[in-house]
Every structure is written in C-alpha cells, then in structure tokens.
Amino acid sequence: MSKQSVQIQRGGGCCTPISVAALDPQAAGEGAAVFKALSDPIRLRLMSIIASAGEQVCVCDITPHFEVSGPTISHHLRVLREAGLVDCERRGTWVYYWPIPQRLKWISELLSVPENAVT
Amino acid sequence: MSKQSVQIQRGGGCCTPISVAALDPQAAGEGAAVFKALSDPIRLRLMSIIASAGEQVCVCDITPHFEVSGPTISHHLRVLREAGLVDCERRGTWVYYWPIPQRLKWISELLSVPENAVT
Image (cartoon, rainbow over all chains, first blue to last red; front, side):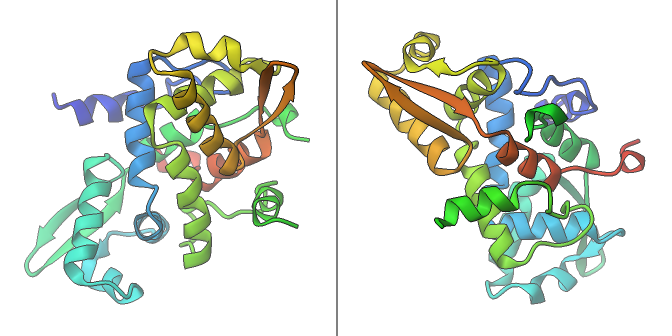
C-alpha cells in the first residue's frame, strides 16, 4: 500500500482537530504536505473547480479558466493528485479529474474549531 | 482597516465551501496565503500547540518542543501571525500567543464537504 493510500485512509474521519490536541511531527508533516498543495492560488482555484463541479471534469474545460499554459495547468493538477486531493483518468484525448472528498474532509476536520470558540 | 482585518472578518462564517462553488481569483489568493502559512511542518505543529493549549502560550514553553533555534521559531510564529492565524502580546521578557479561531473556522469551512459526499 502506498504512503498516499495510507494517508487517504487515515483521512476518513479519525483525526483529532488541532484545536483539541497538538500534532506529532509525523502528522504535522502529512498535513503540511496537503496544505502545501493548496498554497498556490492557481492550484486552490483548480481544486475548487474540480470539487464543485458535481461530475468529472475534462481538463479541456479547466484550461480556459486560466491565463497560464496547458503544461502549467497539468503540473498543478499533478501536485494536487500527488497530495491525494484529486484523481484522474485518461479517456481518449483528454484527462478527466474528480475530487477525493475523504481527503478534503480530513484536512477540514483537522482545522475545525468548537462552535463555542468562535465569538 | 488592514487587509488582514478584512480577511478575518470575512472568516466569520460567510464563505462558500469549495465543494459548492469555485473560488474567484481573489478568494483563491486569500485562501492560498493561509494554506501557505500552514504548509510547513514546524509551523503546523506550532499552530496546533497554540490552538490546543486552551490558554495563552508563552514562547518559552513552545521552543523546547522543537529542535530548531529560538529565532527560527520566532520567524515561523511571525508567518502564522501575518496569516491571521494567531496573535500575540509581549509581557515582560516573554511573548504570549493565542489562536484566532475565526480564521481557523474560515479555512476549515472552505474545505468542508457534505456528509453524503464521503462514502
């Protein structure tokens, strides 16, 4: 099983929010790697386009949203994929992307705060 | 009002999750900047120590958790503060830190997914 698979499995809802317990170095490394993938404005927009589409998204429909080259978009999509946030499949000429909601849920819960902590 | 203040105010709960709607370039830039602050393992651990403490944390109690120098810790804490994730106050010799839960809630909600999206 790849390291990425382990992380995704872990992302199924078992993590403790940072507002409850401090992270050990290993967990911090795993979380930081995902945040790094989302730390670029183009990648975060790409992630939001794929996550909100409600269906698999053809890269041919993604590229026109950006003023950067196709290869640059492909590079950013690869970073998202390596972080376990999206997956993809080639069909004929085009590659189609979809989000991995377990992974988003994991990092969302990692950052969650109790309702009574927000005034 | 500073740009950071505007972002924190916005973080009060008004953002739409990326699983619901794609981000515009400005929102993506704001979100990516916060994720960048969390994209380093040391900073993410620092954030978790401060967020989980339940009280203001003296920098003198943070530094012993890490094998890097005090100035390095101070640098990382400054990055977290500039991202609006923590704030601090000097009292005598030491600086005390606390989390800004509205900011954590904002980025947590940005990444949240509907329960029925996670199988």
